[in-house]
Image (cartoon, rainbow, N blue to C red; front, side, top):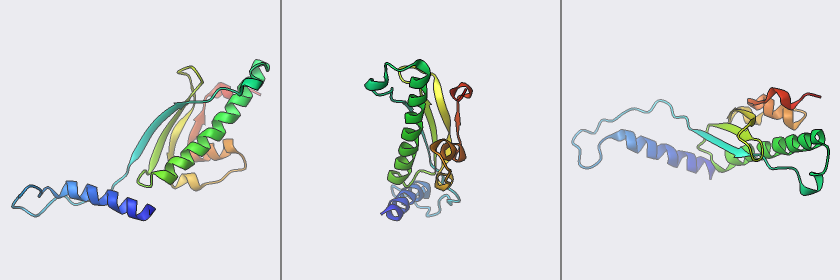
Length: 137
């Protein structure tokens, strides 16, 4: 199904480059050499679970970051799985209720297959960078 969707997407691009729609006499068109699609997406991280909101601020920040990393990994994998025509995703994750960036970067489909021993390592291998003060301990 993924191959079919990708070929269908490429078909629409080639059709747009053909330039001979609407009864045009010339049958030559533009020659497609390369196509790359990029998705830009930003979301707010989820806040900690209500049960954990009474914890110390450092503990809450640690829990929120752990959840944000797990969510980012799942979202990126889900986007690549459900959007086969996308080659790269520019991701920005914001603090809950804020415009402060927690993590950001561009993940390419091929790099998302790289593994690491932890979620943080996988995200870093994929091209995601974290705000410098997020890992102070």
